Image 1: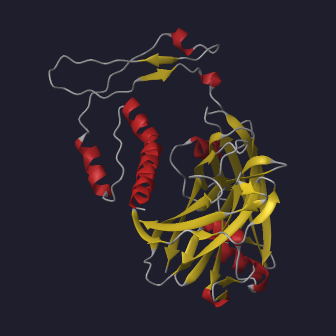
Image 2: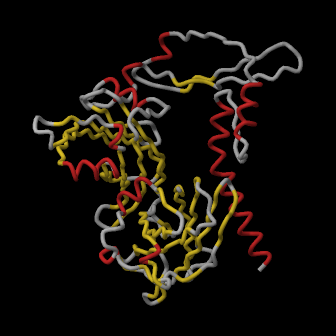
Image 3: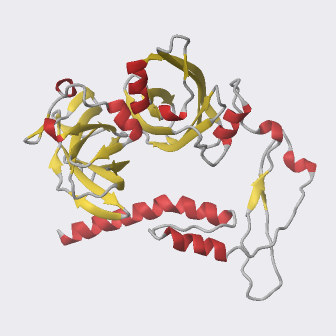
Length: 392
């Protein structure tokens, strides 16, 4: 048992290191610093500030470097004669002509284009997005994005009667592949008119909507979203990286998770009352988009499991929950059988679980890790994470 525990710990350490290797590589190749695995962000900032002594070296390539017909990586090397000096610099650049840059084809404003292409988020309009991957036999893999817009940051106008409120805003969503090419782009204008009760509810919960994008190939994808308030021209944006596994391979995988927050009043002796019995209290789309939960409530989650092995049709899966905050484990449950499996196809099964958020959990950011183990397969485990916040 001790050897098994040590192996599990080492496997998780290796996974963390593998996940961070890309960040370290980017920092090294661009002359920057990688700082992680520390809760003291001030220490990292001090390290960056202490590194502010540098020289700016200008270099102007020949026109042939930016050929529209081909793009290649141009390697750079900088050497200094001063002994003991360490030099960090960009290792090179791609000669990409202006006309080769991927640009949205949609007819949108410059402010939206800037919000979509900027590495920094725009927060004039409060936008939350949670993009998760899923899949089925008909559609294959796809990314589903859950979006919430804070209505208090939108501009509403009353009509002449004073009974109705109206607002208008544009939403643009673009999905990039791992090669930087645009795979999908969508835009839509929303004009909403609400009466007083609807307006009050809209102010409380905001706009909630979803959209899905089919994904043909496995790999890493980036979903970017921008929203513009038409009356004020204020803009908000959000983006998220989503990794799609190869569902066609005979390897255990688990989808992203849809969330639902329910009060303890409908958590009866460990039995989760279906949403239809919860008096309209639960709102999975809002909960999945916003991911904010109160203490003394139950966070219910649902997922899909792909490619489990079954002996004579018997699928046996176990589920283990681990809760993190500040990089530390605050809860870890035992591996328990998943008893609520529902077959959606020969290779896809729906499962769910729940976690009680007790009053001993302080407000702040948390990560829930769900490990799904195939009891019919040797050392076959798939892991999924979901970030959420506990609020007062």
